[in-house]
Length: 612
Ligand code: G6P
Image (cartoon, rainbow, N blue to C red; front, side):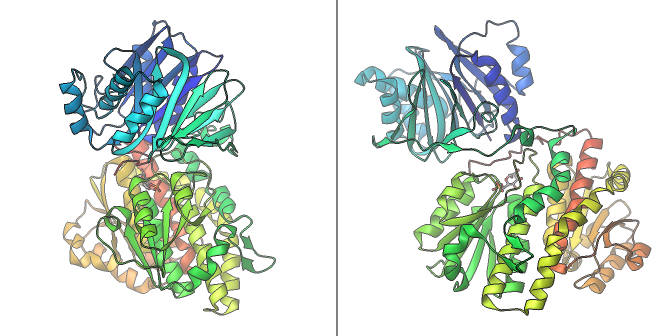
């Protein structure tokens, strides 16, 4: 969702800001804007893509070594030029960009209107900049103090940057609930919603905490205070992220690059954790909490979107291996439904971005009830990683494509490692079986590689079904979450209506939809209750549905029934999601490309959903 980037230093700000906006495009947005401070504050903004903003400001004098820029994902007010950020204050001496939602903006707006402020946009953001100006004028305080006082009056979530014409060397940034990172270069500073616009300039970063305000001034040390006016010492961290990780590296889309990175990202997610030589698993991040997990009455996994699907796989794995009851909940439901939680529960929050607002709220709720909360996150230093008691990073590397791919497989690997570790400690299963599982997990990357080599075959299938309007994905057991994930991938990026179902449930509804125009994707490897799946395939065949089946290499039985087959190598049943998901990612990708869709930035979707 909304992206923020700001700069102050010796260089021209404009090229840095525009490049930064391009790097943040993946977050999802519908308008963009920029503000440069060069004597006066100049704002340019428009609806649409960053490239449209670039065209819009062509020929303008884009000077100044301090500035800020924004991509907006509309919440209050439609996506248009007026509602796009930055917003000026009434006198045009201040300007703001904002990510988040000010919940009490209507009350504040009314009060400000009564005091003579006029509003040009429908946004909650404009309220904030008028409020800051009002405070500055009435109380005659420095801009950072006016920002601080204003923030004591707002309810909601924010990451903001404020520029002031009267302070040409100063950037004020603040956060609560929405992420913000400050990059510290040589005599220059960068501010951004995440590290991607920063890392080509510096690896030294400060992740802001909630209710912190940063006073960033040319030729000065970074200063930080809290909204409650306490001084804070900035904690500077070294980021281990390379520029190549956030570039396409020869691939036409980030999504394809990330699909093809999976042999490597899966390996990275088990590196230093799966010890085949010692026949054991270690997870340093949760070591101190192991007794708590082993004695947990139940585990509740909470997440959204693709991460929730990984959670479903995790439920099957942990129950199978460790015999601890597991429940999986959408964070958005969990947080509002008054769940029964106690100190004996362990919550596992799964999130690629580590910023999903509903998952963060679910964590806070669980913590308030005394539960132990663990995180499985991809983004190092993210809000969820910091809000949880302990956790395990997935180490999949930056994921830029909005549709999650390599983060999903990395999450499933981490959940498998957790299951193996708990089984090892609890002694729930024979060591010989755990040994087999560890070995098999270790060779999963090479099996993924083998599937990727068959991408052309999947592309051919995509050519046949690219004009479909609906699709059904069916699987049982471990392959039910895979079916859900396959359907989600297709609808996210190709806009084809797709549903995932447990194959047996088909009879309770979706079967009514099946005719000669309905593609039905079966995840039907030769493991688990394979014979039952064959029966389901027969049922679809009898109704003339088009069957695409994911099958185990060499399986002739399903091949005879299906219209198209995609082979995956054989593996242990619980590891099949790591393989079966790959062809489904590729199928969605090729269909979306053939339909001319914007694969990396699908319409209306955001990579990181920082509002509820
Ligand atoms: C958005 C993204 C999805 C992601 C979901 C959860 O909807 O587009 O790809 O699965 O959020 O995000 P998280 O970062 O918490 O995994």
